[in-house]
Image 1 (cartoon, rainbow, N blue to C red):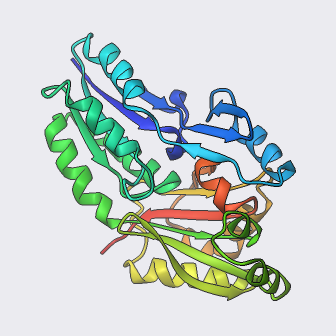
Image 2 (cartoon, rainbow, N blue to C red; image 1 turned 180 degrees about the vertical axis):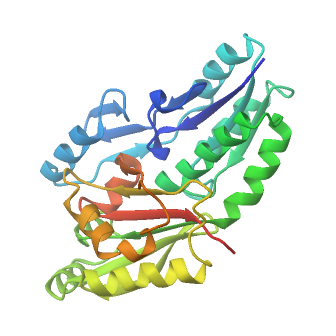
Image 3 (cartoon, rainbow, N blue to C red; image 1 turned 60 degrees about the vertical axis):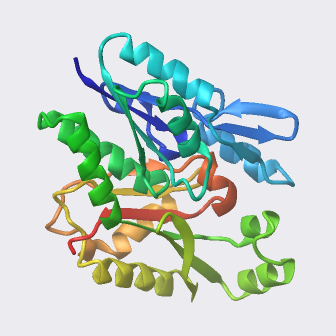
Length: 281
């Protein structure tokens, strides 16, 4: 008997990254065409379509049936399931998982990560660390619900164009912002997207991220931490790492970097970077 983790594709994790992991895909719709995130549409293909499209794609939550089918297969082997979803305030996926879990009351736990993409990835990675330590499922869930409150995710958007397409800001605001090189810095706060500030240029934006890291007490390098990027190029995330080497130098030999998929990329657009960490405080 072992513990199996199920998560959704908005965590931007591949099934092959961990043993005993199932990643269920969100649905991404471009016009009349539906795709399974990470299955029938990889991140590269998504951004190619996003750049070419005049309208934003639509992302759909995972239905309870998909969770139930995945759970059935796992518990039939006598295993216990911990489901970790993206924030319940941003998607109905957590609710779908909870509905499915009711049919397996003694075998399934559901955790609302209160986060997205690389922030959600932190919680999944930490769950596997606790499994490796031999902790029981109920104790792992308790620890996950504790540490998720210490997870920080901050992102820098390179363009306002996709916020405009999504109706989040006006065309006038988007045009003015692009002319002035305004780069929004956003964070996940209590499971929701919040605006940390609007910076004039990358340098000021990097300072806002650095201030957020400092206010959290710094990065706890004994816990998982991840960086993410949107789009087809890693140039901006590589430049960010180089410009902020003081944050990592002498504290870690490797920075885990991953591509952010369609769930978040739809609204962020290409050229965004994200930093997720567990605060020391």
